[in-house]
Length: 151
Length: 267
Image (cartoon, rainbow over all chains, first blue to last red; front, side):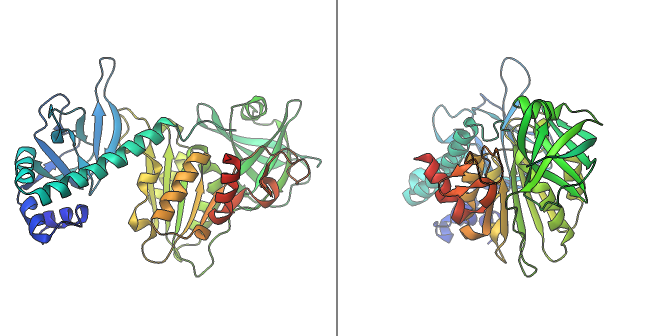
């Protein structure tokens, strides 16, 4: 297995090795310096990333004031889920906080491959369902304000 | 029950509403506390409040106080030279790992770092027998306490420090997310660690569940519960939680003890 296959193998443990290889063939290693943008909100969601090293901030930019960081994403985790569903535009921006290396996937190619291979499609969607579930839980807990003041 | 008089020898502003007071005895000192125990601090003319020890240095005591009520506001605003009453030490503190134990994992949320601080000092002093992993969360970067300690610990061999905050602007170059996100399979790999968790109850609840999911036994997870301690000697019952008096039996419990107590409260 190469490094990209290792990364995907950890994320998709139930996927056969051959399918991992097929998916890995769609990934390309990308390097980002601190403050480089991985993608920008409202732009077409054409590429998603799996972080190999470094740290990425997911940000929202509102009409009043600078960007606020919603969360950070570290090694082994996914940056970008908006490519999965229409309108296929980024809801948030992503920026490297430190020197970062990712594996970038062409979303259209992955969707096409998933459409032609239901087993692969199921596993990829299951993978992203897990990512979305984890982030939804984290968002709910943060709404609870876990660090609220106490004496 | 009679407080000993202590003088505020130093004060360090930790954040907008939180200060660490260093107290030294004016006359007789209280017995030497252990990590995780607490004192009852008197703001004379205002009232008394339970405050955990954030530093123990001979007879000098450190207490980190967040100004949220009349007593804690009076304590937090006490100037250097002011006199404060101290009763204690009270309660059962952290149970440190034995000499043959594996690594220690310390998880702190918000003000919860303060009661863990003496324990962290003891764990760090016990290296290289064991590694120490700190996972610390706060609402905002400016709410992180004891930043000088954290800066020093980052450079210590055998100690790892991971910080995360809930909310940050672009000036923050660290992680944003839940403190539980700092815990992964590597946290419990190898020799089973001992975990020490302190923070708001919800944070401890979800942290303990995360550690259990990662395979840690409930007996190896210690948490510090906060309740409304008044007498601190088990007479008044204000801090009773199920069959337990937090001032006597706690504030530190292992998770096998704490989980049913918290469930009782939730009914």
